Length: 326
Image (tube, rainbow, N blue to C red; front, side):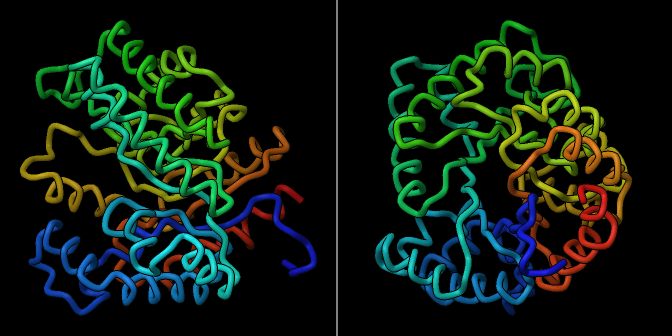
């Protein structure tokens, strides 16, 4: 694709792609908490290499990740927001978006309405910093179904409970809207924002102006949902997407142990774009029909070879998908 023909779909990556410990020469037995502490002790070293890796891989934009690749740590790495902006600009990178776990803010407000203000303030600060960098989307994590089902990841969540979650999301959406930022709800596997009927309730209970959907094809497929059908149903509410593949659904009840152990099992099911079961050609036809424009984020969690895997996804996109859009 010629550099003189700007992409209708802009390609970026989430910095979680660079979280594999072996990639950094760190003992893989380190816990997630130890990994966060290692990065936060010298964040400039890690962010410089991650940003250089994004350039080498050929993406245009970056999405700030969960800790230790988050926006707050990135600012600390370079000292100021302005210095971070310079570090990006000198590399020809722009910020597409930034991730926030979201779920803890929502749960806190559900349990104690007085704590709603804390979540709104935290998201507001996130949005203010992000807007300074020229981006306008916070990808928001959701609430696990287990919170409402007594620990059953496959259980049904009552419509009334989904509506309560939607109400809290709407308040968070209003908080970030003050900075010109919009929330995009991530379709986390085993969360209240994955199954079609649950997504319908959440989107119906939130404002399209303030709250959209980040369709993650890998997470939807992992949890047994139809990623293509989800995109087709809600493409008008999608400001950004996570493009990763998945080989098969995984029963959430089979996941046990601490969160990072469960996540490690999930990673064995995810694949680079075009190497799983998602019908990307139909996905692209839906985008063409909607004349969709926006960011396609390669979120390859903890890739052992991040630059090569991002490149593989871009090559698949250019070879198989870009011609569909024209």
